[in-house]
Image (cartoon, rainbow, N blue to C red; front, top):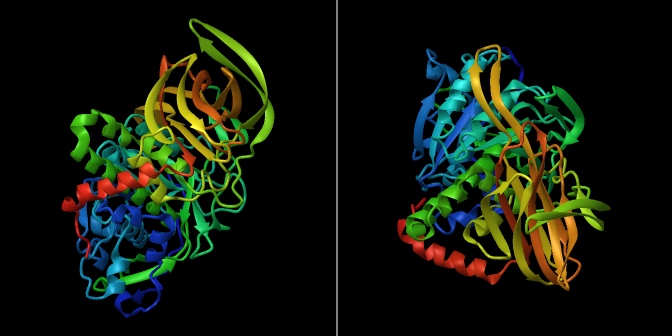
Length: 544
């Protein structure tokens, strides 16, 4: 199966890093996305495993990997690894987990650091030959590499993808099935560089059970979308009816810096030049930034489990579930000035179950989004600092959970008394189901297909009466997202509903992750972070 692949046009216009005096873009990116919040409390990716799966593999002889924790390299059977060394894979791997401890040159030292420099970094290649302008990938090789790393990796980063916007592409279907059955692995995918038109999100980023990443431009502030970043709305394909609904699905989950980013490169004509770097732009560079933050989140959770695990049961294992990581990342994202999920005031009909019976009512003046996420930004711009606060906090004002809701019912979350003027953000994430039963180079058979249609509602209680305030009800996506300013003081509640299916037979229950926050944030967060820092400082891996 031959496909044409999108990737950043990375020309080898390199400079020797130690001789360059310009400001290091990685330092700017870390400040913009907030990864320093993790680093300042000693979280640099320790205890986590990242797999960087590309057409080729990173060149491990580069300066930036001198002290990296390098893991396995997995390529199709019979292929010489050295023939698959790739500048593109080397650059994305550098952003993920580069680390050279030599700090004799401060600029060179800082530029070597990836987002999660203490993570174990493995590599996988899906291609057998990357020497030509067009690269072929066999579906069986594709499945073999991804199935090898799903379940054993904390995070998979993929900054490549077939050049297709078809909603029924086989690659995204296979990835959804693997992700649904290996929920301990977070997969992050670049959305593509085919903007600014609609329906330009490509291939694997159209999978539902991944984190699809767009590009923030305007370096070095990174406060707006890059013109070339692929965009939704994208098409929705129903594998049961074989029908496609055009331009209805928000397919971008989050956005991150990806313009004028520095990275390590491999020059096959100069194999002894181990300190060559370049600058470029693309979603290929924004995806590993998000993957690195996902690794930091899991690293923090492992440290918490080591310290508190016996007292909290499976809490930290749940915290590392891919759905929870995605919900927290999306919920903590910052909203750019032009962000919108097209909320409108509308009437909405819903059902409340009470003591063995149910009541269906229609409410007026409800804030309703049938989109959930912004078609361009997703939930917004990556905010690692906010994600760390979410990881550390479980209160009525900032919360996450991994729960299950029975079909035909709902679950409630009490936010308590909330002052008027505060902003509520809430994100609901669940998986689309499927299981790969047969695979060949021509096709994949995926069984047990179903897509639950959950809903997210915000209620307030006034004089003992429940009143519906806002609803996220997206028929064609597996993320619901609310963001609004609360107009009145009162007791607020969130409700997760499970009354319908997008397709397939309704299961008895659906597992989901929910995250929510009401800002300004409680002082508890900062205090707990301080305790956390003291707790782990003695196990901190010093990076300088």
